[in-house]
Length: 302
Image 1 (cartoon, rainbow, N blue to C red):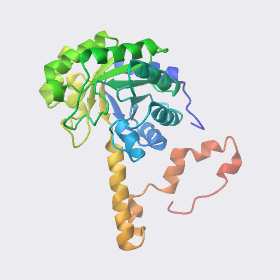
Image 2: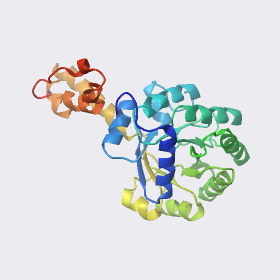
Image 3: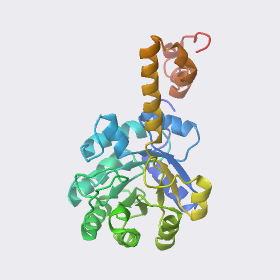
Image 4: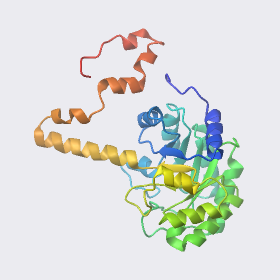
């Protein structure tokens, strides 16, 4: 992998579809930047996710619909450039009316993504695991999904519908909405904030398309393990904000340590080494283009 991926967006979309059709569970961590997406690939995961909450937090913003479609498309393109894994993105509510959702689909196709999900909240939206959410009428979300389907140019680009109705209208209503979104053309369903194992089972029995399990920390959903999700018949295990929480926890601890001790020396065992970073970046591969970029020897212990 030098400068860019070895695969095309069309190939990654077909791969994503094939993996979803295989019946096995795909493990999908959320990247915090393009380099972390490469690390997700390097450590053997199946796909990469770009969370709206993470993209907003990266800009120092809360997850309440303040980002724009063009901002997230630009970040997505930076990510798809460096990984051969399929990348799924959180497209919030489609950033406006059904016509905006249609434009969003084409922006995300152009950014090299394998798919996106649209949700049935209203703007200003909020994190799916917070109270006080407001959802659109079912008919309005159906129009949103249909507009996305009509705008799609690559039939392999995955359109997933997320419903936040469980916390607002109850489980039965969430299932009814999911069925309506599938009828409108959604390829997969993301049931947000399910409360327990029985609700996961009920959704799987009721909806006959790929299902995503959102395993976000500190939320309303139990952190089910992969064996349980496989037994339930789910298709994607999503860890949307895990890496951001790990990274920001480490950054905060590190800053406090430096402030208290006056040196970062005690933090060295917790750091990614220079040599590992260079390995991940592929420094040696770049020498195939220009030997002058890798003409150095790393100091011992790096």
